[in-house]
Length: 593
Image (tube, rainbow, N blue to C red; front, side):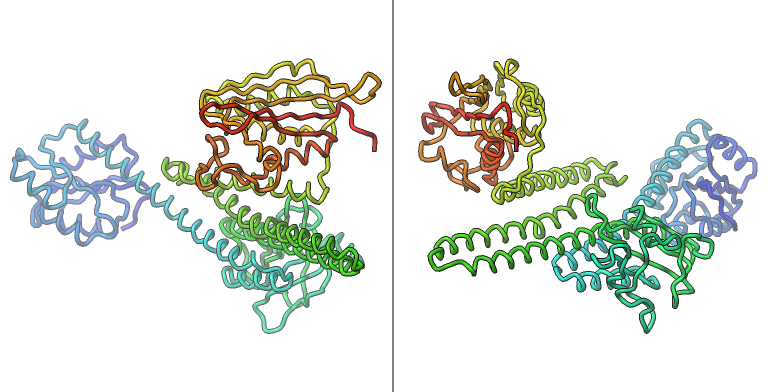
């Protein structure tokens, strides 16, 4: 029996007139009405029809009665048993209701049946049926996405720790071959200084005994008939579902049977590192899910390629520096040892940030964003809350990583300032608006005084925002709830003859203060006051912990502007609350380099 795409309602009654009355009552519903005269006929229909949302069953049908048919339906129908509503000309009693529920039926209606009541009950089961279908479709989509996530997770685990380029590419292509099984996959990268106008095959995998293209094979970047060259020039994904009709496709010797090709850019930020090319002997070989998964994998291998490059650059820098240090004279031996120790720490630090931290953090960001956009997660409040927590945690981790990178730039004196005209009053006002929810939560009062009269200064607004964000956050953090934070400033002129003018900004709080032994130490890397084991987590919670880099970065940025920063405090006292004053002096004009 052919099934309809609409949900079905099976009416079982030996009287045609009764079946017509029931069908007429349900005529406004978008369902497929199926009628059966006998229980045996109904059982055959139920076994064949997989889209039944409800069965209307006359209890007293000839031969097999309704109760027996209900029991048979529970045992012999394919898939989930549809809900059954018994209909009888006999007034129902407690015994009939008990038998109704024992057979698995959901309701009992007495004849004559009210069309309105019947329509209402059937509509409920129709809606439940449609919702179940939606849930099953969502579960199927989630299952497919889970498989793709498992693949990307496996790839990330296996390639993120590889720092040899050739090994990395071969491992990645092997995973692609195992998961997707296409005829050919390869990674192409731009040529070196001797061949800057060519794209070179760095690694390839084939489902043939002999490689078709050897590593080192080249394609001109400006080639008009090459999907790989096209993607390298445009930086955009290219899919050819039938290469026989594609004007851009380039036939390779030995791969004449290729019918589909997918080329994906390997991009890190704004830099194009290469192209991932995958080819198949089937037309329309790449489903939307495959493209999504392969795009994610392409992003992962791009991050890994970037890590390999950074690692090799750091390694070369370290090797050069060590070669120079070994040439020092014996009189500089003590200085050499200190430099070697500092260099090793810096090298280890950069390696950790660029490889051990940034790579898994990028994966967490990518996966959590994918989950947060998933329809199943969005529709589930608990899952949405859990995923939002992951996203927020990843965002905070990214902030810590960025702070560590700022410290590296400051230590290596590679911090670059983008100097523009900066209005300190507007900058601090913007920061106060951003911190308003936290200030309100902690019941603090933030006051900004006398900054509107200050002249505009030449500075990097982004870097200065980091400075005052750190000072305001510290003031909030180390001031008990209900405290006062004040920001005020004025112009400074060293002497009547001085040409240089400076501004001084003071961030003052009514917090627990700082002991005299810590006034200078708090500006050193990773230094934190108090017992670390007693610190709470969170950026603005009272006495919350942190990585101990904020004030180090603040001092480095201020000094890069030619300024000075220090702190004054009568001491540390959590009952008297003596407070602290952070002073920042900045030149109005930057010297001409």
